[in-house]
Amino acid sequence: MVRKRDGSKKPVIRGLIIPEQWNKEGKVVDITIQTNREEVYFVAHNKTGRELLEYVHQEIEASGKITERLNGTVLVTVKSFRPIETEATGKSVGYQ
Image (cartoon, rainbow, N blue to C red; front, side):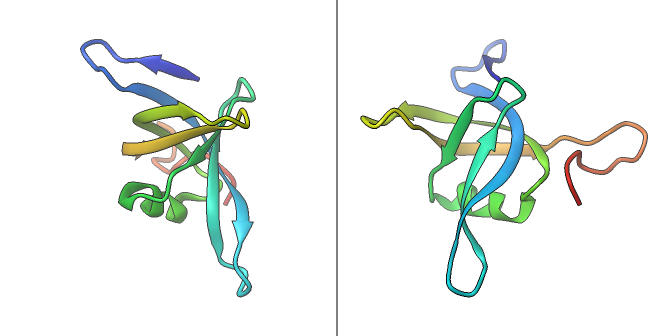
């Protein structure tokens, strides 16, 4: 879900990190953020986007620049993110 925080100019996306593409060795090289509203955001390959590769199958909240491509896909250039943790366990939500 995309929303703007009060006082923030960057939209905030909350969703699950899902692998989209792997290299020949089986390592994840492309990811998306998928929201509970079935929105899909392809993650750009900037420094912060590469850091998100460590959070596959975990829920995160990210902010950054969102652009729609000519083919209709949506790209997010993540500027910052944080893992979403449950209160009970203190661990990130997602599939482990």
